[in-house]
Image (cartoon, rainbow, N blue to C red):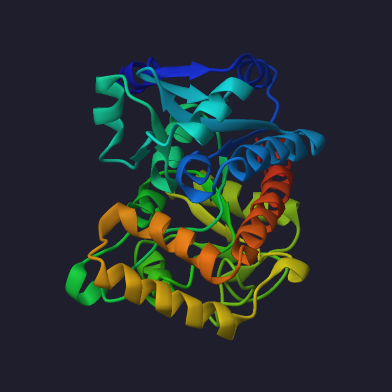
Length: 311
């Protein structure tokens, strides 16, 4: 009954509904990257290119947002444009979802928010840019992304380019381990660090093949082990930024955020904007490249999961 009531808030686009009815694989996509993560028009262009690439690989993209008091699973071109240009979309995590739905407002879903909506829609794979995590200095601030708790409870596989080095990546991985969330990597042994390929920390398991990734995930859920799985895919080497350079820029941007009193959910958009300026726009090109690559990894995983539903 509760699940039925929750599902009543969903509005599936015609392509998503058709794919779901036909049993075709679906890939959820977040919308904060459109509303808060990139400038216009690169945000909308990237969203459309990502969706097109997922379709080319045999899956149906389902970008998630809240529009007019409904959870939209799959967006039209006009709705993508609205999110990309509005500047008024709320940033929706778990705590924010009821408020934006009840008010009938416009909202872009974070990792945690998208996971919740994807699970309600029966979508098993979600592609994002980077994972939220334990912020530096969390021992004093208790600033830990809701993404990590969502991974501990919501059974969706999350494909990402690791986590941004604005975070304490070591503590982020420790937190995931404590809550039983497996961290897989593909293409390399180590967990990725968003703008740069290597965080310096090993993932739990390396699985390069989509079929092997799907068997791992199916086995976890078949055992009744609820919760998500993280799949880390490094940014393509040609688009990666040198680790020392991006770490220095991150430190500068973090210091600026602290001096300006920027806290909470405003931190990440501020840092992304400052890093873009400090890198002369190169960070945006890296961000676009890693999102497209993640979409390819996620689409292949969704197709493989659909092929082994009865595993």
